[in-house]
Image (cartoon, rainbow, N blue to C red; front, side):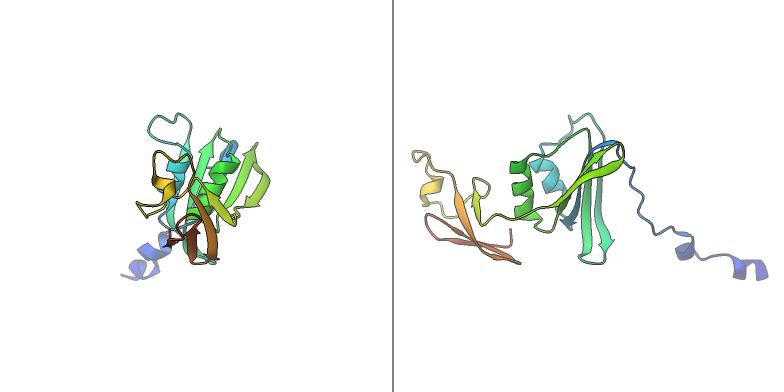
Length: 161
């Protein structure tokens, strides 16, 4: 009976440190809004056919965000247009470029003042949704947190993408 008192409880046995394998070369996208990591993978075009390692962690405790997601992609860099798309769904995300297991460049995503060709206007009558009109969707950022944008053409607002 005394031996049982000295045994750690199940909760005490757990190691609360996050353990996601380090990558030798690639990109780590951190501070993704909780539950949005799969959308980040879609933006990057990563699906079942991607051959290199991809690590995905969702709902990880975060002091600054409450919970966050993390995506690690081996042997892949990230393009500016992909960063801009990520900024729309995860405006607090950071991009870490990795070489030889070390961060060689770190940058925070920056939501541009104008979002072009990324978000579709919800107004079916908007000129940006007409096949015969060669225009890309274009939105002005009215508010960053929570995100509120306005269509440049019809002025319809969209909130909380």
